[in-house]
Image (cartoon, helix red, strand yellow):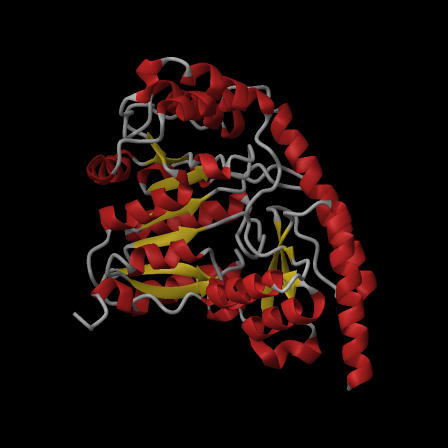
Length: 396
């Protein structure tokens, strides 16, 4: 029994654990660590959603097992959201399933559709579950450019010509975690046409659809005619409504794929607690004012972070969406790699960030900064960075 289990052997060491351990040691020693590492929203869930939960939980009938695919009212609320926001009509019985967050939904979809050796095309860098959900299911990952441009399409063409077996699925994630890249509807049209031509599944992670700054709201790939033939899209209430611990997400799209996911889930869970589902439905059916307020807060934090970090000597491109900034490591520290630089920031600047290597090998020259502290703490972080950078210059 000393040998590692098969699926555990397929998973690399968790790079974030090194940062978490160092962060815990620093805090135990009395350091005030500003944690911008994990994308764990600090904003409270809107009071109206909490009130609905408290109201429904008083009814003991809601304390029993729930529905694995989600109660009808919740699935109907999600379908209404898609029609209102994207102009996409969904059948609530066959094209919508509620998940325990988009992460669980993605991992279970991988279990539902992947066989050992199946090739999946995945952006690099990207959110870890996009690749490791399939790796745990025996799949093989072929890396793709993360930026949605002509290079992405050229890489798709090469992948189909040179992958044996032919790729099973293409993973899309726009607005992207961690890079904050955005996709246009024209890009989606190209990808959908390609996927339909080659009979490849599209799996789109749209968890950050409502966290955007200025301009037009990010589109859904399902807005493209014919996308429903090959696509499932995942969304989450975690960031949109500051409900990360509530664990509510959705998968919508192609009936055959949704049926496969629903069947897998029926063996694994009974769905989220019914009062949570009712409260989530109420949130989706609300007037969107709470969502707009969340956007305003993240945009203010983004602006403060970009401006104050630049004054400190660290220039970071301002993200157009998500609650993250994808920050290039300053040139003189790039030799350390993202893990080494992240460790240095904890030790010398009392600042925790997420190493880019945790999102793929092509992320190792960046770190991800989450906007999960208020403006005062972001300015405090900038002052610490300035002292660190000045001290490093003096020491050189």
